[in-house]
Image (cartoon, rainbow, N blue to C red; front, side):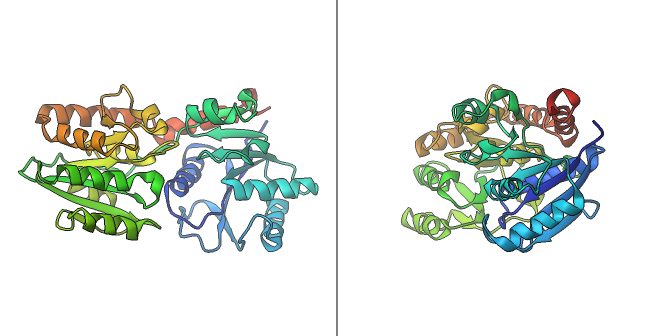
Length: 348
């Protein structure tokens, strides 16, 4: 077939990992394929796409919202997409509703960013960011394995300039950032710092925001860590954030993929990560990070202590391995896999 026209839909109003993955996918389609693309976002979305990407913003508040459905129907009628790429349950459910009324003819592709697959398995095909999501969630839910394709998240390395390794001093500077929700494991991270406060001289910088913020700050105060831990809000300049650190921690309890780990490695910052399934799929056996157990502050504390004892040569080797690892997740590399999915062989 000729190059497909892709309607690429993200209706979330957040700005976490899933939203960043959408931006990367949209950018990759624009930069590294010949496909025609129209991106659709919520009217109040904080996301910003390159001006070179055709985009439309719609007003909607639920998958059953008649105004949102009407606006999507109008977009589909005008654009006539061959492929409708749905990020999240809401756009998928809305497109399936329009199809039931005979208003959608293109193939509906679900993008599996997390473990919420109940509605996703109604799609014509699925792109999953991790192989374990196919093996452990989609296939057991009854989705045909030959219609699920592993397409990892990617990072845009174009303007990423790795930081220089920060010289060791008597104070170990540790960073973490993300959405403050339970599954991201920030509570475990703070508890790990509590275990270490009388053993290692530490400075901790935590970036991000979310519903757990008040709880995390209260825990910090309860453990007597106010002089060690600083909450700096949402991070807009990632390089500047990484540049001040000796090590970055990803304490996630659950992580379908873990794009923050790739960001960290791309900027050349030493990394400690849990073995949450998506993270382990990327990092296990690569000698690019120190790994610890999930939901285990003691294990995380041990890893922090271990990295504080690493020699400069060991840290440089980890950095080198990490920079090599992220090349396999570049936009060009993943763009080739994306085109493979839409080849004659896989499309039909």
